Structures are given as structure tokens and as C-alpha cells.
Image (cartoon, rainbow, N blue to C red; front, side, top):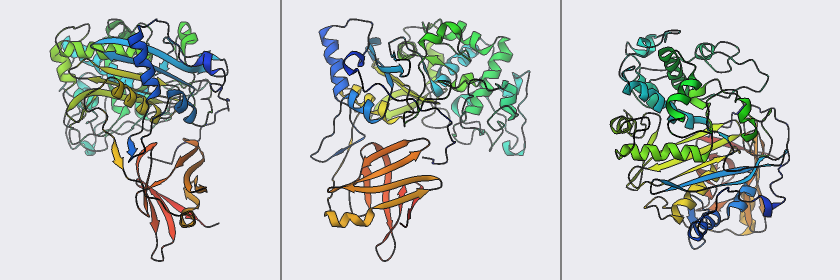
Length: 496
């Protein structure tokens, strides 16, 4: 967690989803059987945290959690037995315009773009136009990667780019407001204005370890353009999106005029709208995909079927196996992460663009999965939704919450912890109401205003059911609280 986050100059848009709940909550264009409708209701009413308090189970409805997280809109697709079982939208695509989320509403996919990009790259490998293990400069024509001493004479391969093992800089991208001058891909790679990111260069030698780099993915975007001679979005449409049946989806940046009515607007955690509704991402391969859960679910299903040798709309079984095989790092495949959830292997990816977050998960063998896309800036909500889907559909070992025993203190003993805390320009406080104390985030540029109940496990360590993080109070030798630690971040207690 990083508190040093840029200042978003957004206009305040009031959230309207709290009104007209009956007519707004839950939009679907398809009629489902009673059995499926029952499953949908279970998912909607069984959201849960990463942790459970002993003898005090926590369960919420989707409507409650959308209000809690100030989430304008949510869209969900559930996959069962290699088929989309149901898709449903909730809330507002744009609260000011009173535009509802439907199953067709398009969201920015963020880094989920990288998964489809990898499919596009591997299609070229499959067609004999690229070699995964060759030097990237063998294929780059309009720009060459400037190797220096940090790479230690080792060459970066396409497999390195897709698995984040190239040793490259630039984790991610902020995008550009409407009206900004949009840089070319060469300006982005060289860190030249009007690019708002640093140059993509070596941080250390390739093939040493995993380190996430959207910059590396952007190099793969240029490789596609240089090798095919086509604009990136055109190649991806013709060779990946259209064959997969992802007919609503597009890598065009900015979006084409015919898509505008379907676009969701992005929002921050405090309800502020992204200026201009969304950012533009010329880093298309890394963050530029507009899509919806239905289309992403089609990609998940095709991946599952291809892995079984039952379909090859784009990639063969052998190429899909390569894509889903960890490369150097035990979790990083090619454009996808491979995670073992208590013995059940999944392939998955998440995405964050300005005002949007999303996540997809697909099982490697059983043909199950879920896609959640939201136009809020908080990943906690989709985590809770995914847990509910896992519980409802009895996904083996997918949700095994940590059980913690809470300890309680007298009201007067809680006084010790109360006060203001600060990390840089970010302000926090610990307050008390009755016998309960709360951790408050005060007008943070990323989080907005947040209040979470503190649950103690001893007199210094505590947890919040909303955040899977390490928290504890720091005491001096006299027993006075001097700080609060949130993972590696120190929030110093400020004297009144």
C-alpha cells in the first residue's frame, strides 16, 4: 500500500445509487430459470470478508456493500461448466446522467488488457512470425530497446515481456485526461513529453526475477505493430477479439463514437468522478481495453476449452499450455497469473484504470469462473463478490477464511489509542463511539473518507474485516502510543 498518490483534479459528482433502489438494483436482459435466479440471490446476499471473527460471522448483501464502498456500478458474469450461467448489472454506469449499468455496459479493463494482449502475441508465435525466446530487438523496427550495463549483456525476450521478468521499469500508467495531448508510443517508451511516465529502461538484468512492468507490455504492443504493419487495435480486433466473440470489446483509444453510449464513467472511492468521465490510454496493450463481463467470460471459457483441446478459436492447446505455464516466477504465466487456491489451480488477472477496477478468475480444470467489473476505485468489493460466488457454487477450497479471536477492552482503556495520525500529507484518526473504536481515513486522495471498525487480537495488534493487511499500534517504553503501522507504512501519532 502506498500513500504517495497523485492529486486527482476531479469534479464532485453526487452518488445517486442510494435512491430508486427498487428500480435500479440488478439489471439483466435475460430471463433465467428459478434455479439460476436462486443462485443469483445467494450471490447477492452472501458477500463476506477475507477473515471471519470467531463466533461472529460476517455476511452482507451486495446492495449494502455497494453503499459502503460508494460504488456506482457493478457488473458480474458467472461461468459454470464452460458456459456463462448468468450476467447481471447493478447500479449506475453514470450517476449524473442516471444511466444504469446493463449487461452491455463497457468498463475499462485496466491490466486485464495484458491477458488478451498475450493471446495476440502468441497468435503471432503460433503463425511463425515471432519467437518467444528471441531478442525483442529482432522484431522492433521503428524503435530499438537501448540496452545498457544494467542488463549485464543479457537480451530481453518476448517471453520476458509477457511474464514481467524482463527487469524493466514503469509499473503502470495513469492515462490522460480528455483534451490532453496524447503521446505516441515512442514518446511513451522514451519518457518524452507529453508522456506522463518515465522511460522504459532496464532496472536490472532480464530473467532474474519477476517484477511487474506495464512498460514491458507496451514494448510488446510496438512489436505487434512493427511485425504486422497494422495499428494495434485493428490487429487485436481482427485476430483476437472478433474470433473470441468479444464483439462489444475494443482497444481503440479514445473509444470510437459508436461505443460512447455503452461506456461507464469512472469514479474514485469518495464519489468524485474522473474528470472527463474516463482517461485515455495510448498504452493499449497494458491498460487500453474497453470490455464487459460477458466478453471477458468468453475469453475465460475459450482459454479453458483450448486447454482441454476442445477449441482453438485463436490459440492451439499447445500454445494455451505455454501461456498458462509459469515462467521463471512460480505465479506469472504469459499475460496471466497462475494461483493455487488450496489445491485448486486458477488462471486470473486484475485490472485498475483511473476510476475502474476489475478481476477475472477461471479454473484450470472444472470450467468454472467469474468476472467482476466496477466503475469504482476499490478492489475490496470485487473480492467480496468473488468470495460469494465461490461459496454459492461450492468451488472447492476457494474460500477458506482466516478465523480470528477478538479481544475486548474497557472503554476507558481504549482512550490510549485515540487521536490523529499522519503519513506524509495523508491524515487519519482513531475515534471511539461507545465501546468501539474506529480507524478513519480523512479525505485521502485515493481512499476518500473511510471508517473501519478496529478489532483487537491483543493490546497492540488489530485487524479490520475490510482490509487484508497487517496493523498494529507502536508503543514507547512508557506504554504511550506513538504510531500505527499499516503493513510497511508508519502513521505517526500527532499530538493534539
